Image 1 (tube, rainbow, N blue to C red):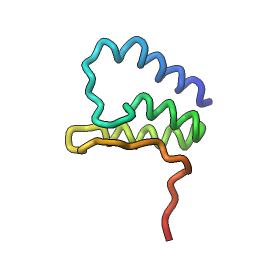
Image 2 (cartoon, helix red, strand yellow):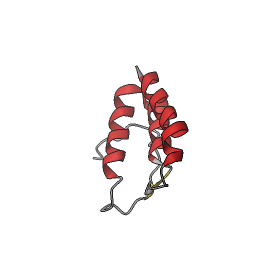
Image 3 (cartoon, rainbow, N blue to C red):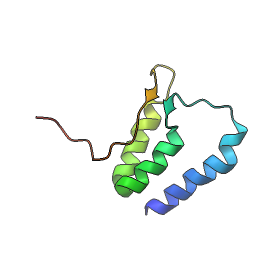
Image 4 (cartoon, rainbow, N blue to C red):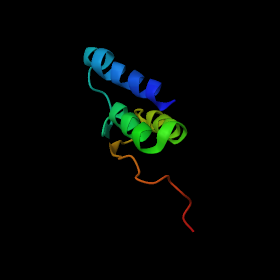
Amino acid sequence: MKYPFIWLIQFYRKFISPMTPPSCRFHPTCSQYGLEAFQKHGFIKGFLLTTIRILKCQPFHSGGFDPVPEKWPSKKK
């Protein structure tokens, strides 16, 4: 199930992204983050992480370095 989303992100990076000016506020870019999230965490967790990241990519967020977590985020005790 994760492979269609990986394909969509790769399609975006190859054909759509070059036609638009760079605008991502984060490093790695949101598309690279999405690829890594799907590859590391599978479909459900990758989709959730990517969705959260895209929602943060807006003018009111400062951006910066935001890598894909190695493990699924959990509540700290």
